[in-house]
Image 1 (tube, rainbow, N blue to C red):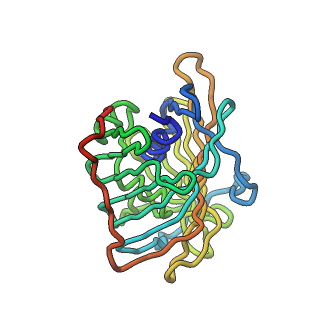
Image 2 (image 1 turned 90 degrees about the vertical axis):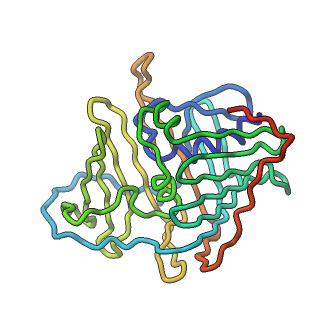
Length: 277
C-alpha cells in the first residue's frame, strides 16, 4: 500500500493524544519514522511564564453544527521525513461520522470513514482496505483513543467536556481550564477576549511525554469563530534509547461550511478489494 496515503489516515486517527506513546509513520518510501512539521511563527502561541490566579468559571465558546464540510491540507515533517500539503476533503456529521477523501493529481487516491465504533479506509490505488477498532488502537498505544477526540481536533472544540464543577485560573490573556484524564494532566487555554480554545497542553504522569495543540487563523463561519489551522506537537521518549523525539502535525483549512442538510457520506468497499488489517 502507498504508505503516504495509508498513514495519513492513521495519523488523523491517532492525532489525539498519542503524544504519550511512541508513534511511527511512513513517507513516500517504505521506511518508517516519527511525525513532525514546520509551522508559521504566527500560528504558535507564546508560552511565556505567567502567574496563575483563581478565576470564576467561564462559558467556553464552541462550534455548534449538524453537518460540516472542509477543504484542507494535511502536513507533517520530522528529522528524516517530509510530507507537505496533502489535499483532503472532510465531511462531518456531529458525533457520528467523519468522512475523509484524499486526492492526488486530479483524482481520489484514498477514502476513509471514522465512526464512534471503528475506523475504515481504502487505498483506491492498490485496491486494499484497512479496519481498526478504538480498542485495538487504544491497546496498541496504551491510551484511550475515541471519536470525540478526533472530531475536536478538526473543529476546535474541547476534546474533554467542560464539567459543572470545572476549575479555572487566569494567566495573562487566558483562562485556563485544568482537567485530569487518567494519567494525563490537561491544561486548556481559553482566550479571554473571545472565550475560544486557543491552546491545549497535556502531560503524562511518570514520563517526559507531552502533547500540545495550538489553534490559529480564526475566521467566522456561520456566526462561529472557527480555527482554520491546527498544530499538534508531540514530544515522545523512545523506549529504546530514552531520547525525546519531537513531532509536529498541521491541518489547514481553506474552506469550511456548516450545513443543515446531509452532504452525503458515500463509502463502500468494493468486493475486489483485499483487507490488509
